[in-house]
Image (tube, rainbow, N blue to C red; front, side, top):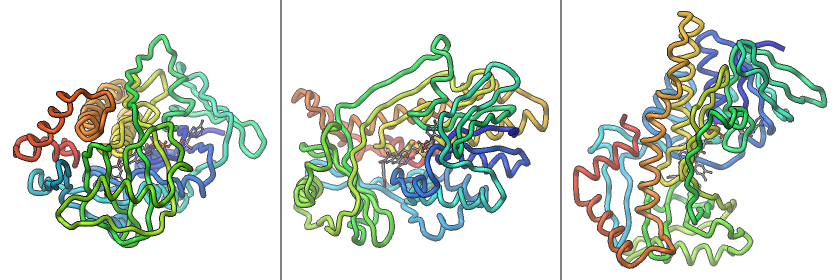
Length: 388
Ligand code: FAD
Ligand code: DHB
């Protein structure tokens, strides 16, 4: 088996890379360990930056997102019993769209298959080989048979737990990491949205977030112990916690409904550098992770593959390896800014068990500064919509 670019992983990074390369006449094969049904049903991100919407639209896969996604012009920050609106559009001229990641996945899979693109689902024992030569390959098992996919390049788009990052030798790799002492409990609820815009809540019992998915489904999160189990949380206990954290004296109430999905995610900041070694290039969560508070993860994955697809195109069209050589430097500039923003939002909005009373007062003062200073509100808004 031979192709131009062997792509490991059919998440947003791998599928979009395959599609962008196809639009430039470059062939790829995507190897995915899970089934199509699984990747199309995994509940994850929801917030798309303007730049992400633009790329999906330009690539011809934005039609359903435009129709079914909800354009949001602001977000709210809630603390000290009051809500404060950050007007994203007024401050930056841009907006965000709430459209579930698995819907983006469905749109990309449909586009790849409509163009006779090759995605192999349910592969195992995936292993990048000879990446420091001009003839790399990927070995894998599919339908019980061993295969070797030869390529010019290997793109590691296999998420944080994939096999691609470990293929970069430890001697050349530097990892930066912070693990947070809390997680997010996420639920999907059958009900109309409680709010037209996302509400990020700082509360002494912990962070909470009101988001949406559609006119009939809400997405809600609250800070929890990352080692907790969903079995410890009855629906009643969840609603009590959400009412306590989300509501104040203004009469607004979070809408209850049937909870049809529950899950706990851990939170970390992580960057691995370099994002390339020989003919292997990492993109998305394979190279970096952000805590979800800034809603940046999927957007970063999209940003990486935009750069990578251009660099690969330059290699084939102009025989130039310049953009490929600069890939890590170009990608990491944006990645570190998003790492900073996600860490900042996380620190400002979560409850830290070991925070001294002094630190708690500083946290409140920082929130007051952000909502009362146009300069600081603008900085938050620019980072949130991805204005750079
Ligand atoms: P992934 O989506 O992890 O895809 C990797 C793929 O590779 C998977 O399909 C996996 O099955 C496959 N794979 C793994 N190992 C192998 C292997 N060995 N061989 C073959 N295939 C393999 N981001 C945002 O931008 N906005 C948000 O609002 C947001 N909210 C989030 C909320 C939650 C609850 C979570 C968990 C994440 C959120 N994120 C958000 C982050 C976002 O979901 C990720 O950053 C994004 O999925 C990264 O895409 P990716 O393609 O790099 O990796
Ligand atoms: C969602 C997830 C996030 O991480 C975030 O910051 C905002 C919204 C969501 O899943 O809707």
